[in-house]
Length: 259
Image: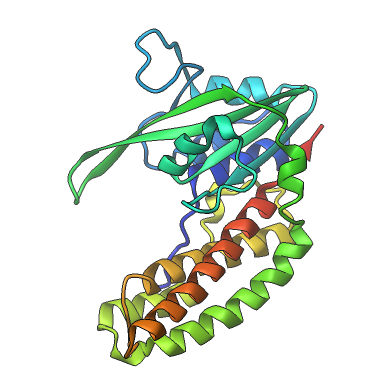
C-alpha cells in the first residue's frame, strides 16, 4: 500500500485561500482540519486569558471575502527563517510552520498552536491559530525564488538525496525504515485536501517537496553505513541541503494571489 504524503496545516490553508473559487465552502475547513478537533482563531498571544476566539470557518469566510488576498505558507527550521517576519519568528520555529496573508493592504501572520491529547492509538489535536499583524512580507518571500525555480531545484534535490541515500548504505537499514523510504518514493498527495483549481505544476512541486521532506526525515534518523564521523557529517549536510530546497519549494508552491 502506497503511503499518502503529509501536508502542513498552513500549506493546505494557503492553497484554499489563494487558489479556490470564492466564497469558500465547508470543503476548505474540512481539508485544513482533517481529523483535528474544530480549529479556532484568535488575535491574542498564546496564553492570553482575555483573547477572543472564533471558529476557523468564520475567519476563512472573512479572509476569502476580501477584495484582494495573497497567501504563502512557510516551514522554518532553526538556522533558516528566511522570509518569516521577525515578530513571529520564534512562534513559527516552535510550530514548524506559519501562514502569511496580505489582505486588502494588511499583512498578517498565522501560527497554529497544537495541543495533543488522547493516546497513541487514538490521538487527537486541539489547534488554535494565533494571528499577528506584521510588516509587509511579500518582497522578502519573492526573493526566495519562483515556482519555476523550485521546480528546477527539486530535480537537483532528487539527485542529491539519491546520492546521499546510497552513502547511507540503505541495505543495512532495518526492514521497516527501508520499506518506509520505498513507500514514500511513490507516495501521493491527499487530493481531497487540495482545492480543485490547483494547477498541474503547483501540484507537482507540492508533491515532490513533500516527498523529499518525508524521505529526508526518515534518512536523518539513522547513521546508515557511514564508517567515520566525517562521512556522517557529509551525508547529514547533503540531506540538510535537500531539506532546505524542499521547504523553499513548498513555500513557492503555496504562494499565490487571488482577486
